[in-house]
Image (cartoon, rainbow, N blue to C red; front, side, top):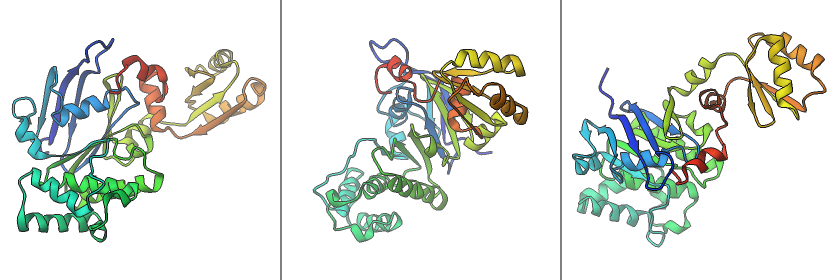
Amino acid sequence: MSEPILKVKDLVYSYPGQKHPALRNISLEVNEASIFGILGPNGGGKSTTFKILSTLLRPQQGEVRICGVDVVRQPSQVRSFLGVVFQAPALDKKLTVEENIYHQGHLYGIRGAALIQKTEALLKRLGLWEKKDEKTENLSGGQKRRLEITKSLIHNPKILILDEPTTGLDPLARREVWNYLKFLREKEKITILVTTHLLDEAEDCDEIALIDKGQVVCCGNPSKLRNDLGGNVVNIKSPHPNELSEKICNQFNLSSRILGKDVRFRPAEMTSFLGFLLRDCSLEYDSFSVGKPTLEDLFIEKTGHRFWDEATSNDLGEGV
């Protein structure tokens, strides 16, 4: 096995005046030519991790090595390895598509025929060549995001880091962006690291780190992580969740999770469980659903609360 292209060990960061650290001993490894997702709710620590990986923040404790280079000791060298796409747009809307790429190339000292050839190759690769003379303000949301990615690739980075790359895009544009990320991974062998709060996007990653309150709660392939939960999840909506939970737990010797008005079970034997629910508890709930475990089920299992829990983000204050 080759060494991971990105290694994070025991990363710690605290913002002044905040009650809790934004990052608490985060560790993760990213393999070359893979798509790795940092998945978590708002306030979980994704953006702080992104800022440290892209050398915008210095870690207060811990170590980050990209392509074997320490981000604190040699940040300039690390930047040469990185293509960075920020959550906020960084395009000049009055320039054409081609002009945006040219100006980005100039920042990296690329000029003349080399820049012209590289720009043409990138725009064709990401399906924007026919739009090269179009003003950026006239592009669709998905095309603008692709142009941001194109800009980040002008200097041939080894790793592409994107912070919430599909925020504000409609479902079709989101799928378009992810198709191009997969293309870059498969055809160009570029390593891609994405932060996201969208559970369905995490399913497109080769591996994910699920983070909450500044900590990694689990890491691995999303399908395997879900499957490792096993069985089915039964979610019951009830006006009296505590009483219903006690009744069912006593009957089947099960444990449950109560989240607001919802009671969640993972029964080993589904037929008798549903029979009891329909026969003996029909007046004690409003509705129920049965399904295979999702990434939200995984998150609940690991943290004890829902993925979208206002207390989670409010507890940290800053949009980390």
